[in-house]
Length: 72
Image (cartoon, rainbow, N blue to C red):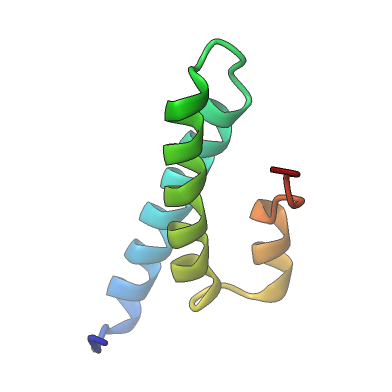
């Protein structure tokens, strides 16, 4: 496990970067033209980035990016 110390400005920037990344991945996951293998890779990455974002954001903000569980 790694630890990082961020100042307030760096936390806001990280929050922004993670939100933009989540937005892009949600957009891609809603695109039906994307191959299922690529979709699985995006979903896996989405879970990682979402967990990172969940450490910084408020519950209200987190709920905007929460996805329902997809049956496998």
